Length: 125
Image 1 (tube, rainbow, N blue to C red):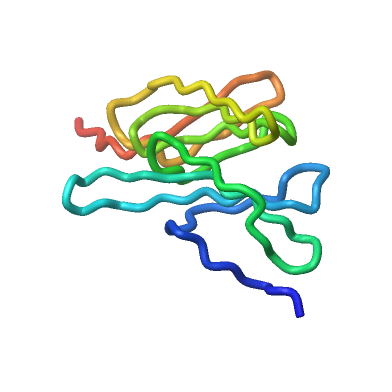
Image 2 (cartoon, rainbow, N blue to C red; image 1 turned 60 degrees about the vertical axis):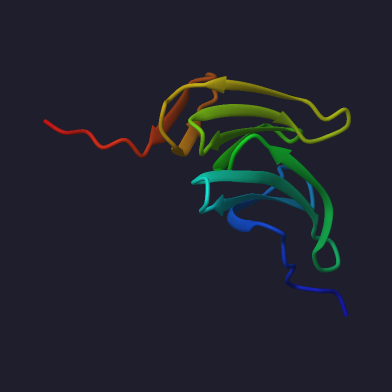
């Protein structure tokens, strides 16, 4: 009987079906309390007959949220304040851009290539 659940090596944060596919992308993060740093990955799961880990792509920090630019390209908000544009198909490649000195919590993409992010910085008046 196919598995309907799967244990990942890091804490899952967000999941979304890959457009035009029967696969799922799951973002992860893992906090190292001794250094207060977060690592993470994008996990690609086959979801045809249950769940099976197809590949795990390490990122430079934890990943809370992501969106798809197209079915092979993920744009992700990282816990080190960077955005990463990650190719999830072979050849796998990534481009990282720092945008904040704080943790990015969410992002949104528009059809016009506008990207909006939020971070965890407190704003005081």
